[in-house]
Amino acid sequence: MDTRKKMLGAIGLGVLVILIIGIGVYVKVFRGDTAVPEEVAPQEVTTGAPVDIALDYFESWLEAARSTSTPYDSGLTAQPFLSPALKTKLEEGRLRDAGEIDPVLCQTTLPERISARVVHESGDVAQVLVLAKGKPEQTVFSMKRQGEGWYIDDIVCSYGESTPPREFTFDREGYLLKSVPPPLDPQYWHIVFEENEERGHYSPLLFSDKSNCVALDGSNGTCAPDTFVEATKVHIAGQMTESGIDVVRLEIVKE
Image (spheres, rainbow, N blue to C red):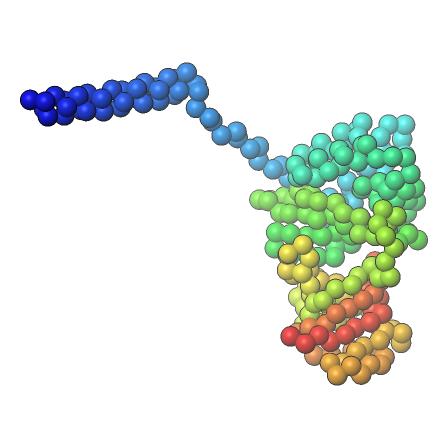
């Protein structure tokens, strides 16, 4: 009898626990106590070629900077075709001190003449370089395709007064390639390299009689592009220009 009572008591206790849990769930669900995941707004895009989108945004920022208002007052940091991270990054620039480099123009003074070109476009990613005439500072727009349009994922000053002076504006490893598809120009050798863990970035290489090439055995001399072999791994140091990279030094790297 005692055993039976104990069993019945255990069963009753189990039922009670289940009822309490059930009531708790009921209260949470019907009183709205459950944690509902916050919906993330979809990234908006704008249509057009990446170079046009980047140049339009740069020029809008420049026009606002020249006016009596500011780019921040003009709502340029809240454009829907900017990534959330970029919006936050640009807003932080509102607090910069006078004389510090502008986060979009990448200058401390307003540029007079500008130009833009695509330095990389492959699949759903693109990079556009905006330069001010006669200035070493460069603005790099990183863009991503979504659906039928593009959005600006990041804006970086690749060289300017906010960073320590560097001997070269391009200094990295990659692979030589000349058999390139349109819109690349096959008359130039190109370096194909990785940037921000993204493969497929490229830039044409410009050689002169001052370009120095170093072979695997350490011998060096004036570069002879006619002797290059496709897919050779190299380390290139040079200056980034509107037309490509002015090669100062090309060193063949062992795989």
